[in-house]
Image (cartoon, rainbow, N blue to C red; front, side, top):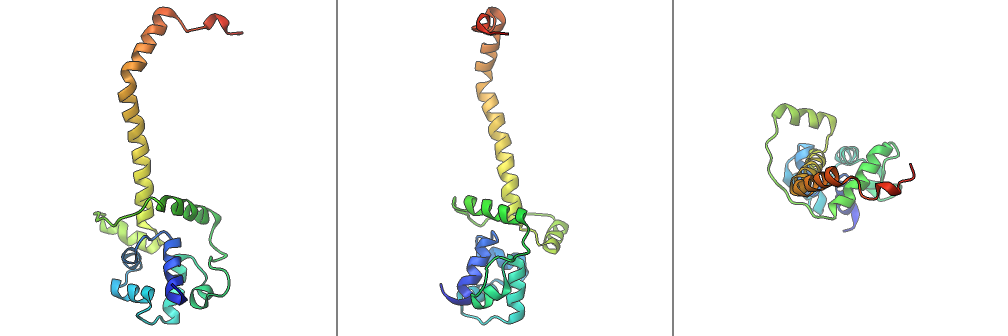
Length: 164
């Protein structure tokens, strides 16, 4: 993909949006408008280029012309690191899903420019880590309890070899 449409797609992906539909939703514009810009079937105004550049954290000059550095120099390092982590996770593949979220939270997320998909993804990762720990504990509880009983009855193995 060459030209502004290709750069727009790269900017969207860089910002962590897995699809044009997700980006359009987050931007609050019709999917047809955004996808037309991204696939090159619809012209883009300079004002819209600046809006996309701000939302996707890229240079408007780069997005418009391909000249200069793609990333905004004002992007905080934490955000850049987060984007790098997202790109690693995104190799696993993504799919669109429907979720129900309170309207006030959506409104505030839009106001802050929050990437809802990324937030939900991180929350799910943390929830799944906690559930895997819990599941491991449950699955291994009999062995751990048996080991603890054995130590109570026989003492710690090789305790006599400890130098302290």
